[in-house]
Length: 248
Length: 44
Image 1 (cartoon, rainbow over the protein chains, first blue to last red):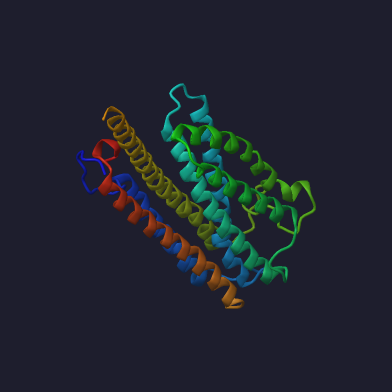
Image 2: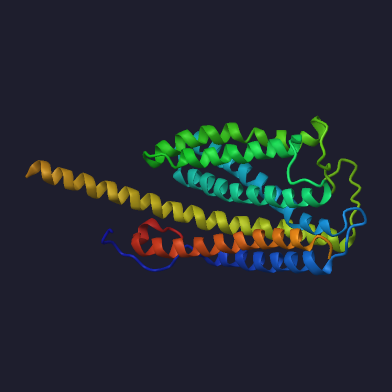
């Protein structure tokens, strides 16, 4: 432990507290509205309730992986190679992997109701699983030893390659014959066939999960900054001790 | 509600994981902030 000034302030700021509050309100509505206040779907019945968490988590996972790619590109292109970009990339990938896991789980339960099976090797499901495994690999590479700069260099290359999978996943339902339904809200003809409160709950869910994502990435990248600082301090202390031993 | 088990499991796992991660993140941040100098916490 270093001996410089330390105050107990955590990683929250007024801005993140505001995100947190907005996320609580929006996700509180998704929970209550999705389970109790929205009607059954004419085709899917009650299974549509799973969509209020499945669709937002999928979109946020995409967003998280795109943020990882953009932040990695910024780290690579920037002359200063700011470690802040690398930490945002890492934090975003962590959150993205978690959201992707939730997407796969909720999709699997929806599939059991609608298709009669938890899993099929359908193009959308297979490419999504591949994307999930790729980013687990990305996080594993970040966890390898070395300095923060070494971590940033190797993980940024993987992030820039992995982000190319996202269009493949998104358009898999168009490119190949797929059991998975095509886009409902973002359909090319712009005709949204959803009841008002159902659409509101879905879009409010996307908003709620988005502010939750912002909150999580803000906090987790600050945690990474403190972990990096701890590591640097530990290395400085170890070097100083070795120098002292060598001089003795 | 039809298929209540599947639907409740989806909501339970999703919101349970989110609450768990938020609590873990807050605790981890508070514990680390005790051991790191203020100069390494530019947001404070």
